[in-house]
Length: 129
Picture 1 (cartoon, rainbow, N blue to C red):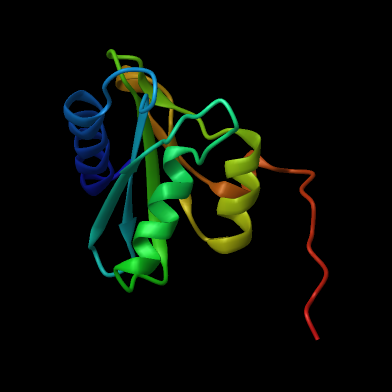
Picture 2 (picture 1 turned 60 degrees about the horizontal axis):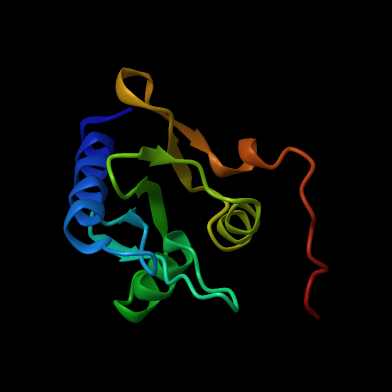
């Protein structure tokens, strides 16, 4: 964990505390680009499905012209702390940002791990022609 990683956790915690209200938005995520910019987002829950906070961040990053992400963290509302990405998010994060580090753990045991470590037996997409 770097000092910048701790800033990312604090930003996601603040976003969860101030923007996640009710049952529609319960998780916030913040990512840091390789150039140091940060981008945040919250999940959009709906009974038909909806994007996780990490996926909202990926879309927001592209909208802001960010192409490479260095690290990402998700934090739950109601003081749930840092949350690991779900399986779908792990696959998407790995496919789109294979060098990404994901912040995991709780309290003083936070750590940043390569996203590839979260999917040791991952699906590999066919190469496009």
